[in-house]
Amino acid sequence: MQYQVVTGPLYEKAAKRMMKYRQIAARIPNAKPNTAAKLDRTLERLSESISEILGELTDKERMALIGWQDGIMRDVYELNHYELMERPYASIRRTYKWTEEVDRYPIKTTNEEDTDSEEDTDEVKAKRSAQLQQFLKLPEVWD
Image (cartoon, rainbow, N blue to C red):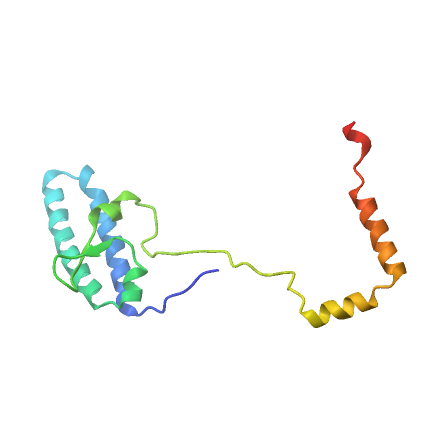
């Protein structure tokens, strides 16, 4: 089961810019020095614009993203470069999945138990007992 957060256009904008940041940051180690300098300046601009967008997001939208951290001042958020680059193929959109347990055998109420015990006759009890004994017999393969 998943819980979905209602997001707006700013969330999509932030996610796209974070993906763009990740792509550019991945190109820097293999780039020539001049190109690396240009990419670095682009990363700075992207980081600033992402920080502004993160400040405008709601708390739920912000929690649905990875790769950000609290800034020095209150209500200011920064891009976390190391978290983004740590797992380059992981999704920027955070997803939590959990299993929901379903009770397949509901507990009987006292009224239901009383009616069941009244309906059980000696023949039914003997038949159930015989079925249980047959079920509990172990095969002789173990000897």
